[in-house]
Image (tube, rainbow, N blue to C red; front, side, top):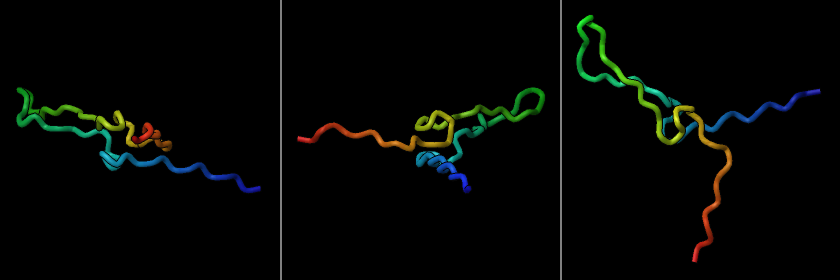
Length: 61
């Protein structure tokens, strides 16, 4: 008997599935390492996926 395959997660439209990036701060420290910070996608909070359900809007007048 075949098992149903799970639906793939919906990719976040804001970050296209790349939720975390390293951003350079434009210089190096005293040891020569590149200074970076990690930034996460604000839409998906760094998961890379969007919710599969849609929220309904309120009634329009």
